Length: 399
Image 1: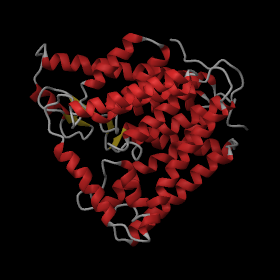
Image 2: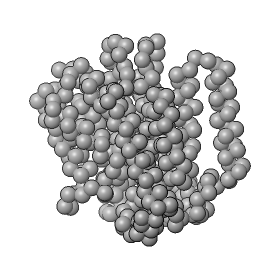
Image 3: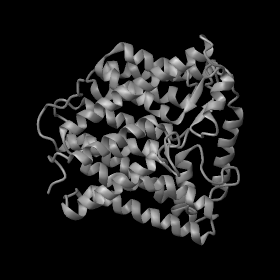
Image 4: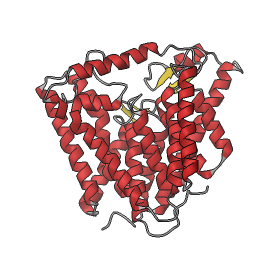
């Protein structure tokens, strides 16, 4: 049975939709718990079981690239565990690395789930509407704290508890939430639709996150998407020049890119530089190529680092970086296969979204955790579906 042109069963469809909704709205998964387990863990294990059953019973035919990506990741995963054990990594740190990176093994489920235009249309709708809903909720929350006085910052802070998904910016109620990575991505879907009001709402929400990386990837995404979809060379040059000048102006006006937030980012930036210095100092002829393995961080960041690619290099070496660059190349190659077809704006949106996740991972750890990884894996499958689908009916679902 070919994995494409096949409508998934109702169970696979519902499980897949729930997995996408949870990935977009609920961050690392700590917000939704069912006893000792999170809903993300339950969905993850369910997806593994369903995809294993499908592969054994129905034996879908995957492309050689799919198989290669899965096998290479599995071998790299085993190598990093082995290196961690050999280098006597602390058991807790080893487990903390294995847990988020094992999310990649949901990949076969997405391959058997995203196999029909109905599924792709629904996923397109989710990536448009869920970030918009998230933006509206965030702005309503800010109004309730800062203007209406319905509850205070102290109450908001206490309600967040010890959840690591939230980071408050000063004492005015503004905050960073891990799931906000989907705000810039969702905004791009509304940019493609040319719907001004949703773009403005999400842009305002992005501004009030006071997150430097989100400002950068929002601008970056708009520029790259215009370059991919426009045929006007002069306009492309003008957009690129304006983008460069905006970034330079932003840095000149606010060197810390804090944009008026009350919190001081100096400490975080110093830790980033210190982390980079310690990673560089730990390099030897062996670790340069394969890293130090899972569980082996650096003194200032013994487990996870702000820069995902720095962490990948520390634990997997150039081999790990090469894998994620190869994954990006495979997505780009599928985009290139669409050249000359009509209706390719939607898959290009996903490609831009993947680039945004990669860029944001230079500032915050997204590609090495289920939040960013889920979008990268889904994007690969959606773009591949468009590449294999015949016809010019590629569009966003209207609901």
